[in-house]
Image (cartoon, rainbow, N blue to C red; front, side):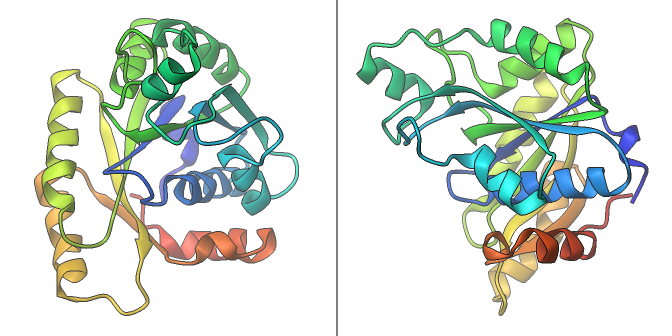
Length: 235
């Protein structure tokens, strides 16, 4: 793997859908970067499907990576929907992505790498004005913050079109797609999973960074951080 300090200041973690393993991949990237001696921070701009007091994605990341990891959750909403839809049901006016970009830029100033885990896919609406994670990346770059995207893909059928569309949306915005990670690699992969390992780099134009095995989120912090380097091949 290359020196993690060569990564952009902000890495947006998005997925080909919901439930593809973004949180576990975010934790794995945090452990990987921190294991090389760099300062890493994790931000969840919008957390949905939880009420106050319940553990969220940033809590899962801290549990997997271990003590001392700085995390930030900016907005929490009750209903398990897209942030824009959940906020509408609660009568909440969600913070525009431009203001999220300002806050994330401030957080990133205190770290070598800041990982920002989005909700769902790249174009899911995360504010009440239709702003998306892609727009957040554009706003960060406009502010002079170096930014790139890691795409977490599912392993099986149906992933290639979504992955290709995600790559095209990023290219239109001149936001680099740094790499693709399969978020839940089965113990016994079938033909579709095996073929997708070859096809994901082809359809996205980005390297395959690694495969996180299914069930990795159930490991304790010591086992998780010890296993992480073996899941990635980042050059």
